[in-house]
Image (cartoon, rainbow, N blue to C red; front, side, top):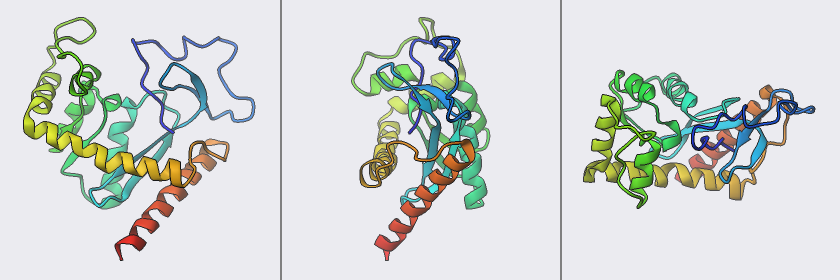
Length: 207
């Protein structure tokens, strides 16, 4: 449902044959790179989940990576909930220095690791560089320090218990492994209806 981040800085469009860029049956769709390196035609579907958990924002974009989606999704949360979230937890695909700077500037407590730090948090070697160079950006350095702390680790681990179960319900219980509609407008409507159905189910269980 969501585009995987490009590995090793490969430009997705440049890695594709120049004669194959669009679908003949869905001109709005884009080639997205899945984990494992396979390319598929589709859309990037994103959502934000509250602690309840309810889906409080849902978007469909043509973005080939997640980075561009973080700030607009949080803006949608603010619009839907009439207030900004106190904190934001997101996986490494959403990390950029600019994203952290922009959300932190709105007094939002951000927990988003860069890809090297995410590998470290999952048992890999300690993240010491970025693209082979020593990191210098203050937002990156501060984020690494925060997520390496016991409190930061505990907070970030909550993301799995909030977001992953929602993906599981939509994919496994609702069968949303691919969109049935074609075209940006129809796909967006399908995604919004799926989010609405999920929330209605949560409300029924909470009664």
